[in-house]
Structures are given as structure tokens and as C-alpha cells.
Image 1 (tube, one colour):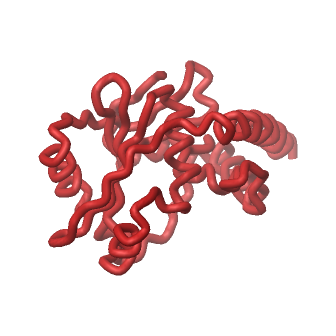
Image 2 (cartoon, rainbow, N blue to C red):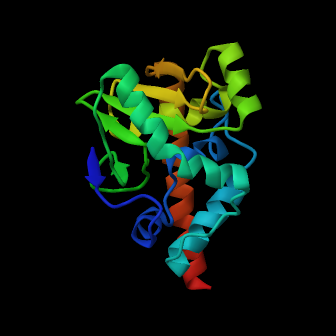
Length: 201
């Protein structure tokens, strides 16, 4: 694993992520069943455009998303208090020097772990608590983080003030990771081809 210790959310961080698939969007490459996603073509074109322009496309953030970002530090402190773990911040991680894809977990935990924080609205958090398992929406992201970093587990931590937090330890799903590796290899190859075609137009 190669890391770049730049502050998440900064222009430098967005530039480092421009034009490469990252784990927060792996659901646009592969479904939870290990099949190609219907959103794949759109994601290919978006990343190809970023490679040509050198700029990361800005995405709309509603109030709930902005609130989640603002509460992340509070959630991280709560996680450290509950678990006794120390969280080290990281900008972006790559599996190797090729930097063909990456991941920006919310923290590194010791030598083996990762932290992924979510600060959803109250009703969403209550739903997570009632289910008591990793929400399906985050399977590709957390498994992708494990693939990129080579670490052994991700602590998924959902936090809402005044309610019990949800902590789920996610471990590698080897069957899914095998499919993800294949889809990523195909995706990166197609992305390279599309980028070259764009440059020749």
C-alpha cells in the first residue's frame, strides 16, 4: 500500500483522486452480486473527462451530506473512546506504485485495520441499528477499501448524537474480492482506451 498524507476535501486531495476509480464509487463498477454495474459507462466517461481536464468533477452536496462531513471528527472521537483504538488520518491510499485506483478511508487503525464513518440522518441511523448489519449500500466501498489497502478489517461506524452508535467489523469477502479485482482490471483498461481516444480527437 502507498499512501499520500494530504487533507481530505482539499483541492490537492481532489486533484490526486481525479481520473482514477476510488472505492466510494466502486458500486458504479460492480454490484453486490459481483456483476458489472449498469452505471459503469457513465463512470468511465466521467473519469476520462477528469483525466483530460485534470479537474475532479464537483458533486452536489445536500444539507445532510454537509452535516455528515462536519460531524466526522466528533464521530471519530467517539469511536476512539468506545474502542480504545487510535485513528491515524490518511489522504488517499493506492495498492501499488501504478496508482490505477485508490481509496480514502476515514482512518487507519493500527497495522491491520481501517475506519469508515457515516453520520446519517436520525431515521437512517435508527434503521441501521434495527438491522444490526453492514448496510448493503456500503459493501462495495468497504470491500474495496480492503482490496486497495491490503488490510484485514474495516470498522464501519455509524454515528448520530444521542443514539447508540453502530459498529460493524467488516472482513474480506474473498469471493467478492476476486470479482472486484477482475472488474477493476477491465475497468482500468477500458478507461485507458477511452482516454487515448479522447486525446486523439
